Structure formats: structure tokens, C-alpha cells
Image (cartoon, rainbow, N blue to C red):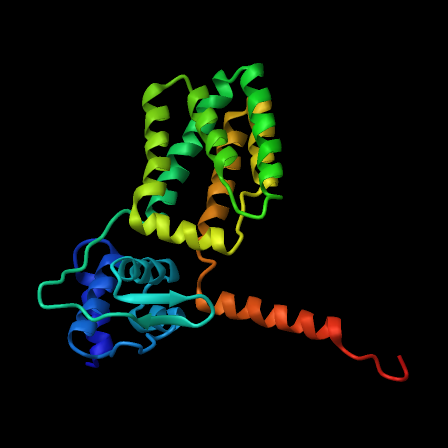
Length: 260
């Protein structure tokens, strides 16, 4: 059995979250000297195939190692070894952006359904103003999510359930303070990924109709899209975006032929 097959079997049969087991495996490879400082790790797709894990699991594992300073993930180039673990080093793990978004899908979906029953006209007007504010903030040079946060917390408040409101407030606190969450969302901001107005408008429309099923579905659709956006740093997507940008630039400055 090859080393990769042994590692994949270990991942599938070990304890803890899958991404943590993969991060531990990559950590052990750094300790064993498989990679030197400056070496490029295999691409995300290669790691996904080699260890039979999903791309989000690979992304989470790399983020966990990046947060701790072992690797540097460069958009469009891949992951490079930044430093090697010392004898006393052990990989640590916080809540990841993917874990947090999974939790938000569950909690905020149900919060939207409950809010649809209790929300008032004044609260709906507040949400409408916040959607407009999101649209305005999206025009600013720097990405800001102030109105986005207020939008979600206003829905949580409209549930008339303090426990739900507090839980969703805590999710947003974790998003800002968990090192792994903060790193990925910071990358998203640098890539100019912004809150999508149409998704928030769909949530507002469902709430205005006082339709719990539609409100839950709209929130699920929005946060599922957020999950997809968190994969923006995958190497292949970045490369494809770079290729499209280069092609567009070439087309823009292409010298016309005499026949043209």
C-alpha cells in the first residue's frame, strides 16, 4: 500500500473533523521533511484526489496551517511552506469559516422562518433600508459588511426569541475573532467579494409576505451562496479568473486588421 493510500485510510478512519485529520497529516509531512521552506504543496484538487476528501475540507486544512504560520496560500499560485514545525509544535484548530457558515445555515434559516411570523411593518421597513444601505456600501472602494451584519441581526431580533438573537450575535462575533474565520473572510474582502443585494432582497420579500417556508428557503439560498464564495481562493478558480482577465485585456487592445 502506498504512503498516500495509507494516509487516505488514516483520514477516513481517524477521529475528529476530516479537515483536522488532513491538516494533521500535512503537518506530519512537514515534520518528516517531505517539504522544505519555499516548497509548493500539491494543488487543492490534487490533495482532494490523493486523500479522497472534498475541496472544502482541503481548504479548511490549508487555512488551519496558514493561520499557524506554517504555509502561505497565494491566490493563483498555490500553498508554499513558510516555516517548519519545531519539536514542541502541535497543530491547533479554531472554528473555521465553513463550520460557522454551516451553523448559520441551520440557525438563521429557522430564525428567518420564525421572524416571518412575528415581524412588524416597522421592522420590515428597517430591513428595506438596510438592503439599500448594503447597495450603497457595495459602491465603496473598500468592502464593508456593516449593513449586512445589521440585516441579519435585525431578523434575529424579529424572532422575539432572545436565545436565538444571542446565538446569532455570537456567530458574528466568532466570524470576526476566530483566526481561521477572520483569515478567510479577510481574503474574501481583498478579492472584493461583497454582500449580494439580490439575495438579501429575496429574504426581505419572503419576510414581507410573512411566509416562513419561503423565508427559510431564501436564507438557506443566501448562506449556501456565501459558502460557495468562501471557496474563491481555490487555485483553479483563481487561475481561470486570471486567464479570463488576460483574455479580456488582449481583446481590448488587439490591433484591428486592415480588413477590419
